Image (cartoon, rainbow, N blue to C red; front, side, top):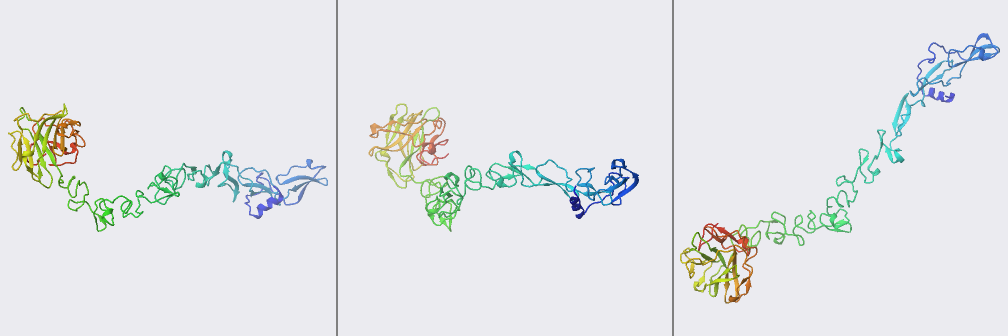
Length: 469
């Protein structure tokens, strides 16, 4: 240590622990030089002084001891403790703080130094480190992948490590078109950035922005409620806000709310098949034609109670003139019996016609036409069918195919040609009249033009009266 350096330590305040620390038994000099009285021709002939801050000398033939210059630095007995030994002005050794006497901790992320006489290793935050200087030093003095989000490709730094892009990290990254949406994440709301239609909740991306639509989950686009009502979106469900009847699926807007359908609101709504009728709630709708309503073609042992029931489900009387009941053999697809219904006269609205054996006793008020025979007048299926036709107009009014589907019945002899006896979906062949009961329309008179929906088996035949389950 130079004299100037040592002076700098003293001027900043030194810690003095005592003199002659290298030689605990030694004493410091009094300054300058002293003589021992021993003659000499050179310093090597003189005795060694006790203090490391003194040196022997031969002064004009007499042995002398010279003090080393103050602040002369001495060998350090404890390297790395931020202290060292220097000489004082009297030839003694004193301990002082020494800023260069620190320990290198071999950590590239710390600054090794002395502070207030103690070794320190302060983190050098932000310093490049690691292989190729591609990492950074953190406040704990560790070499890490990142310190802030901007240090990472996907702008996500968690616990000093770069994280992959995710759909809930609060940052627009990866393939996202906006923050945490689009590009494989959840659809973006209206007004957010987009690249393609699929980025948007409403499915419409224009000018790189998600546009209002009827599926964006917001009340916009002239809608009366969220994604419904107005002139372009679907009608609103019950309880939703509306401005007019046209905004509602029920077609009823009451006090700005869509009302639930009723069977007396004057609208065809809900499950109704007609205005305030039909469906799962309201009464059966009047029909515009007669229907084959019940067929009992098989009884236990001998078939003596066979009948076909025809029901006037319209709101007016219907003439039976020129109408015929045609029984069709499913194995040949041709009629095996044709019964003229003209003798029945007229069926009033809600009245029944029963065509059956003489043993069949219909309910009061029903019209009855007997088969020509007393038993085995209706075939038992696999499959067979029944048709009600207008012989004058050459048209089919109603049909039923049971225990299988007849789709090519040849009614050419009646001027009609080949027709199907299946309405809509065929009645399951397993639904039959092999036990006591009958095939009938349930509810009574129901006709939605689908045999599988209209026809059921009932264990209680009701010739000339309403069908029962």
